[in-house]
Image (cartoon, rainbow, N blue to C red; front, side, top):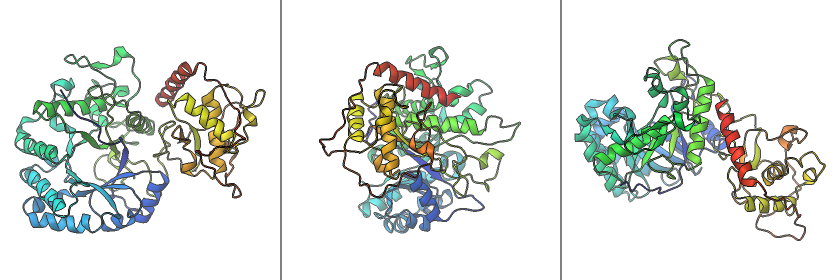
Length: 486
């Protein structure tokens, strides 16, 4: 019996690698993070300029002890204390450091340092305790998913037994300090190395009919993607060693957008877009995994920039969401997934009803927009261009987006008590053209934004009935997933 619980809202973060020939200045990096509303980042070091640039942004930052510093820290409490003093205490709380990665994939990439890994974790944690920061900042170490053997079916998964002398005390440490298992999951590599056993759609989170899902014969749990199967394999592998309350955070996952035409034919822009878009949706829609339904796994996408200086095959240089100049490699399909990484830097964004929003709350928000919000809702009246389809979602989309553009597309103007979200997909249809499609800049300086909590006697009676809402919503969800797999 597993007792893993969600201790905070699951999030999407981004890894920031720096192996670029033209690495942007830290202030430019932070400007891109802000523009993309990325609130969680992981650094592969503790670069001082980057930590200063991230100060007072509220962005939650994971810093890292590089592998090359691990041996020294794992053999000296004072070296660890100096590292924490210089790279954490000196910047906290102005820079919102929330975790420290001690090394990266040490057990597989640097096996000779494995013997000091647990000491390094403990020494770093002791330094945080001394600074009274151990409750605010977690300590862990990212592991490669390759240390999990027999990962399918997940219920039979176990860690490489030869690593038990390190893993058992490490899991003891994570459990006693309330930390989490950091895991790097790459369905791209699992697919590439499976010799056709793993279908591409299963690796890409594409919807599968029930008869195509993988079934764990022991638990009868159905798996529709590699990612969930690997996360659950980690939970079962920990349970095999009697650790049942350590949550998993995925510190790296992604898909390359370019590769060698012959050796890496599935490293394409379409596949990278599909994988990362579906991954983001999967984390935010809170379905969780088959073993832990409803408990989403926070995930850091690999990675922010294409790293053109990375050695190895072409794909190694092409995992990024953006070029060094901040231009997106592709526009993620994130309708209904919130504002994070709605990465159309041409600034064509729209405000629409959030997937699954309560119809009564949508109706209340629609009434507010057309009343106190002072949106011109005449196009929604019968006989006018945006009347059809006559349902609360379509009408709310138009009213929300009109208000959003009227208020200069400020993120806070697309909330409506939590039932609205920013999207990069143009919701215009037929002769119903939304404000963003007309290229309006939406800056009306003579209008002040009324509070959604305010009441007004001129509240318009746009009481659009919600008949057929449930079936309509299911149709929209099905359509959205259909769009993702095209």
